[in-house]
Length: 169
View 1 (cartoon, rainbow, N blue to C red):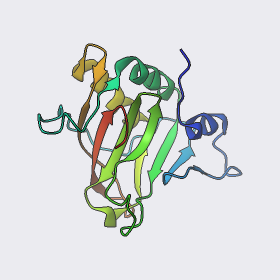
View 2 (view 1 turned 90 degrees about the vertical axis):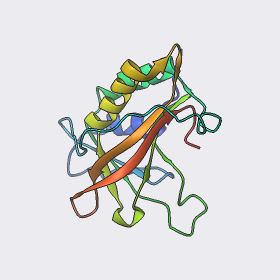
View 3 (view 1 turned 180 degrees about the vertical axis):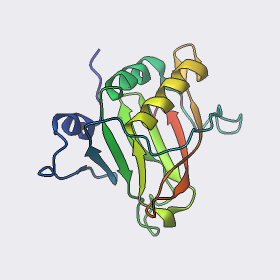
View 4 (view 1 turned 90 degrees about the horizontal axis):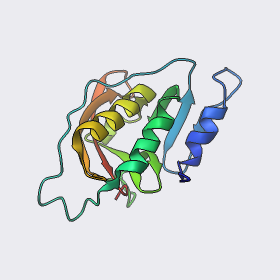
């Protein structure tokens, strides 16, 4: 099975972490900054299955796609910097995809966009995916979310709402 992971991730893994290489960015406002070691910039996350009123809006991800995505992320070293869309943008209150495969997206949305940009480490992404797969899958389906406090622009911690679903919407 061929997995369509965000091109940004593949490119970023190919770049060595040296001062001569600039960070890699994509159109979603996520910037990958490679490192030579695992990075963690977040506190432990909360994990909550979708409430009954959210279920119609949150289409579950394919567990196999999420497992493949996790397998790719355990080899990554670096951080993802999340730049929030401009407040007047139609996407300002939307979830921003951090990493994704064809039918599995890990997306975040800041609870206070004024504290942007936010930094999420590769180890934090791997932990969110692993714990979700291990504890919140239902057969081959996976839909879960929660809150995680990650490094903000000032170096402090700020809350990000996160979720894993089929799409970022």
